[in-house]
Length: 137
Image (cartoon, rainbow, N blue to C red; front, side, top):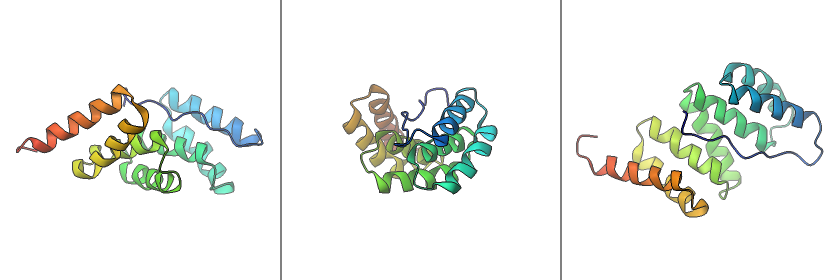
């Protein structure tokens, strides 16, 4: 997913062990090592399931590994908790689009585009709208 950017950096207030885990996992994901990142993330999330930064990284790892249903579940939880999380909203659109669920992806892309003004998000909206208009899809 070379055209997909990482989640924004989100640290918990204490800047403790979870910050170190976040940085290590982020580095692994940036290096395209999602399995190794998940090995770090899963126990850290089990210890603190409310850590949105770690959960965002886990969603990113699932997207890299093309574990789209797991990514979707993680991202839906993040979006439900914070509907204004632009990264999670866009990533959910990606997970749904990659499952060929274009009608489900489009509202998430539209919201991400409206919230961010990011050209990449606008392009995703146009791409999915065109695919939905194509009778062969």
